Length: 313
Ligand code: ATP
Image (cartoon, rainbow, N blue to C red; front, top):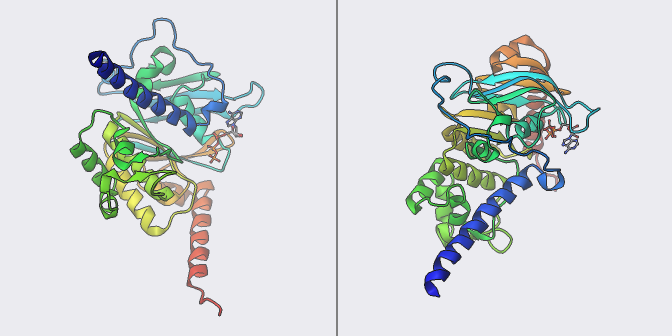
């Protein structure tokens, strides 16, 4: 009986891990509230990441005149076209509700486009299995879900067969190792509702460590909207550098300071790309992006002045 129990128990544990992983993804995109209407095409193949015809040309990610709406008569994206060449970083910015997260959902093929096409590695996402597509993508969500378990478990979750050494290495790259070492139980510290509470910035670094461990071909980063203090922001920047460097990355950015080094910035307004270029070029243009930049600088200034005010007794 024991012989049967061990593999079954093992299977049960991993099944739960895999299932939780999926639930985590679903939480990220509020999928539980959404219809799951997308299914694999009959005979869909695996996403091929280094197809011979693709080497040397084409972009890793391509949106070709994509139009989409959650409801038929309410367009959310209007003829959106852009590409992310291999190893490059493209950032999406724009007002709330302009369609930034929708771009990420379409890339994951949580929905099908109404017109145009989404290509990954030169293949239309409609023609490949969703599991192979999602396996190639690492996501750092806005709000990371942590389990009531050890920090080690929460990081290992990026790749269940990772060794302890690999977990520590990932945590170092995510700039959270030193902090973990200050906890009495180190990597065995329980986090979550029943244990230590981590701040938003720390949770995001745990998500970054997971993604580093997963070592995906593409990274999608949905930056947290919450304001971070300068030190936390610096730590996150340093951690992000390790996942974005030489990896095809799409960032939804709320703080423009995060993306000043992006290879291309797309400004999305009301479902349309109204400006595109590098940070300096867009500043010189004096348009929408330049206005957003000015606004963020003056907000930061106001915050600093507020903090420097002598407190009244
Ligand atoms: P934010 O910066 O606030 O996260 P965003 O630019 O990412 O916003 P999206 O989440 O892509 O914006 O939403 C774009 C539009 O689509 C919004 O008007 C939103 O209300 C609508 N929308 C998003 N999800 C759904 C849904 N599941 N069903 C119907 N409409 C939706």
